[in-house]
Amino acid sequence: MGMATESQFHVLAVDDSLIDRKLIERLLKTSSYQVTTVDSGSKALEFLGLHEDDQTNPDAPSVCPSNHHQEVEVNLIITDYCMPGMTGYDLLKKIKESSSLRNIPVVIMSSENVPSRISSNKRKTMEEGLSPDRTRPRYSGLATVV
Image (tube, rainbow, N blue to C red; front, side, top):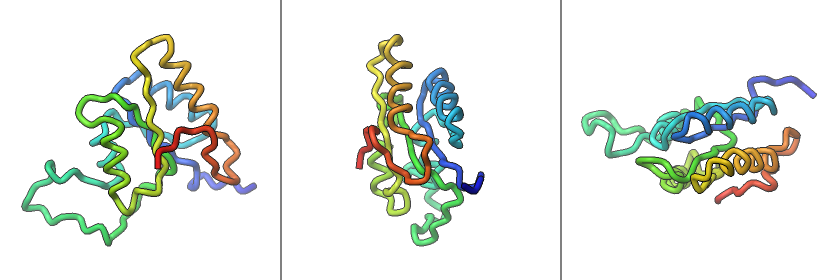
């Protein structure tokens, strides 16, 4: 089929652990996904164009949701559950509250801090869920939270 690089499947990975971010990035890039990694929920929201109210300057004009400037097209968000500051669940709630982002599937990974299990669990989730067959985007096997 056409090699449309611009429409590459784009995954945003959110994890406070550098090792896990590198692992996720490596796994996804082998399937030729476009990967963006950030180390916190607030950075993820910033990347997606959502700014948390408490951090914005009150004098700055508030961004009106009507001007959907989706410069970033993200097809899937993978986030670690347990992160300092904003948990994966908090991030999920913010995304689902946003009319422009709520349709992006969010996968929350929880890796009970057992180092031997973390990489194998994450790798398993990745391989089951992200079939490189992009002709019909199906998120089978992913713990997609709606």
